Length: 359
Image 1 (cartoon, rainbow, N blue to C red):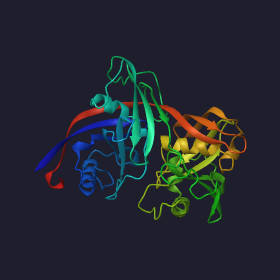
Image 2: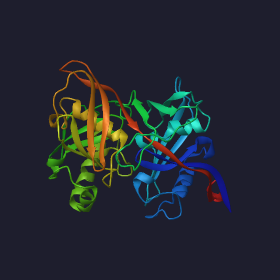
Image 3: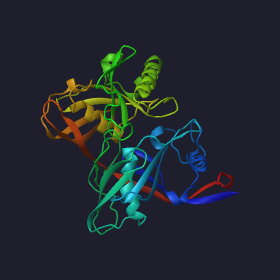
Image 4: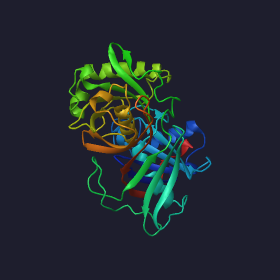
């Protein structure tokens, strides 16, 4: 016997997955996770019996509800569903899936669309941080079509502006959770940073890489991938995250110099494979490290005064432009806000069939 629940399948940024209202899912976390695994078809390398696309970028879930937080419109819980393991991780945020939360909330009537544009204030439950999403609603309804393009996605769509308001240190309590802007792990200099996403940032050259390798080339280097994972696990311990062997955070990132002083080249890992493009939250973390004096990424660019700066984060499919708000004096500069443009598209809405025993 099967049971049905409502489901909306959407692309958010360069990711894709089902979006649920929280009341559509079991309130018990263990039952909810079993439902999400079945919905995606995990664990199976092809996710043949579910909605997953056999890749971490297409095995993601967004759970949305009316916000319980003062001043916020919706609460957004992100779930990363493992492809080949019975594991659901709700520790990280996902800025790409976040792109679809505002449109979903408006379509579902959780937020009333306004003529022109509608600002949706989103509270990310995973990282306890707040994001403003500006959605195009010319007639009070979500407009998905437009002229904005993002690298890693074919075609164009309506622009969705995401402004991260308080994501610095949201997971660990500190932007630099180890207490230092640089640490040495197994002889490798790294920066452990919590800026929209906990990251371990390392220069590509420190691991014998140029930084412009393709994801396939990096994934195929088994010795490199094994060492990177070893460094990541120790970084997680140093950041106060404990044993991260079953968690996707912190994410490891290789950085190298870009074509000009305002660009940094990034290879972002999810963490056991190199991202085919780049995570939004990861791009904000990389941009933050790039403009903050003292990090391993800072010397790849040029010193910047306080103010707004556009940083180009180059990735395998193109680039993400991140606007960072740098404040303070020359000796104590810090990023206090960041924004960028994404697009989203509703693909399908209907009923999802699942085994009744899961409920």
